[in-house]
Image: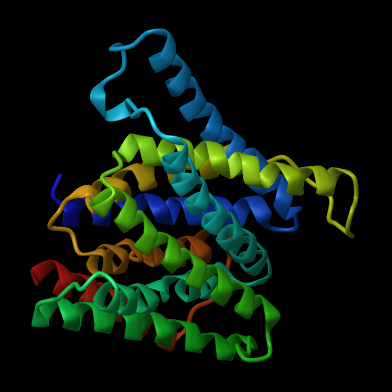
Length: 298
């Protein structure tokens, strides 16, 4: 699959992931949701790692991981640490904000990625690609600003700042993933497998703290959407990492296209969670579609 097509397909599945996340954390304890969803992902890759160890050459090449040095394990653990912090901020933010606002705030990560890709990775965009990325980013911002009509004042709302923090960390993770898959030449299954395992390692202490009531907490309710979070993310990330592995892929464009997941989350927020919309939100969504189209045409 071409890297642009992979980024778009990843966006579709990522939108499903965001809907599952919102369903799982509404009026629910966050840390058990994080723990059990990451446990699901780690269990899937743990089974595949065990299969490859016990019976080599049985799995298809696309699911076989490489043998790693201690330093390489640390590199992948570092990615998991960044994502763990990003998810903690993001999940608490999404829990307290409408998905039709929260998802667009998260989607502004291409701003950070674009700056990092140009300054750090030396990427250069065509004029049409640049116009598409900037149009998409502007539309995301417009969609976020529309939240003022719902009484969410960004500069005073701590949950907005939680999402901003999670978004910046997510952008850092994207740039680091590009380095791992492009420069460091890790394979896609290797990154995803050990990333999933180390996520569980990082979230386990938080789960223990929640169980022992080290801080005031909400009660936990099991929902079908909790393991679905992991399964949707595994599929979205596998395709997403495959796009990054293409030497011609531009990280800024991949991230911009991937944030088309906002369209799925936006529609799902209206349909499943009864969130409201207005003209400003609708125009911003149209702007996102235009930005994605310009990026693909570029």
